[in-house]
Length: 172
Image 1 (cartoon, helix red, strand yellow):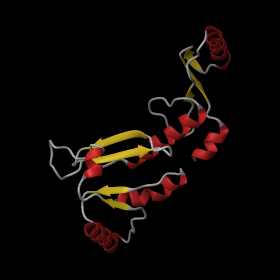
Image 2: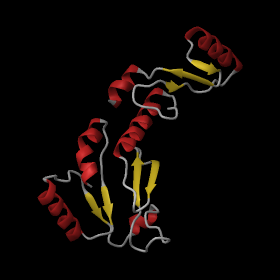
Image 3: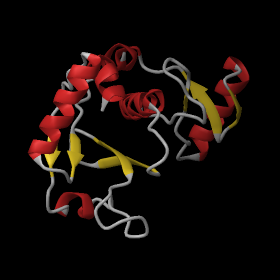
Image 4: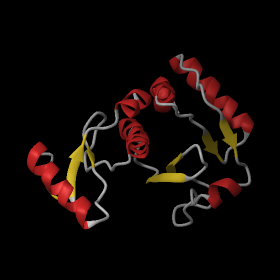
């Protein structure tokens, strides 16, 4: 909670909302939030849903019966504005989430969607994108000519392009 609260502004800057979900009661949430505030001065700026029955947690596979019937594993769901789950990260109880990677995933999804391309392994914001595969032989020939001229790939099936300027501005 504290790590997400500290990164909250970064998520807001990339047009992302945070929501917490816990199978604990609302009273427990209030106690956590108050204790966090008293000990750190940090106010949790996003809502936390009390899922006392575990119905939501079970629906999303957040309770691992191998571990416990009530303890949730540490999950992160990235859900787009069309309510589609795009990424699920599942962390064991003893491993913390890595906020920079979660931010990078959101930015990669936004950039790939906006620029009609794909992000490569180890992609970081403002890096080139993988160009979509050609659909016809003519497009393949054009791709090969472009690679030879621009030196922006290794073959017709793997070439790169700079992200669209409008996407860079929207995703920063």
